[in-house]
Length: 125
Image (cartoon, rainbow, N blue to C red; front, side):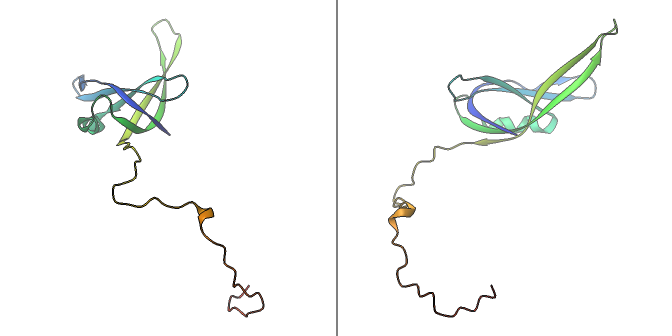
């Protein structure tokens, strides 16, 4: 899955426990009728992917939805979800490069008029 939006917040890398588990969070704001502020976490070596991004950039993030079950000391089962990123890309504005002519629409081309259906072609079908 992928989500797109503008970077609102990039958190610092957090390290947990003696095993050195690392996590870093980013919040992006979607650009739709009702914008959403989506928090995505990057873990372990993927935390470094956020080093080259800053607030205000438009990005596309490839994500996985993760869910887990936990039983508390009272025996109640709880469920938690997270959005985990594994790739992030900068979205450039798709402006036409300078010096390049615009691509004409398909209807700007003339149809072929000298097609002779009686000519034999060598296609096997």
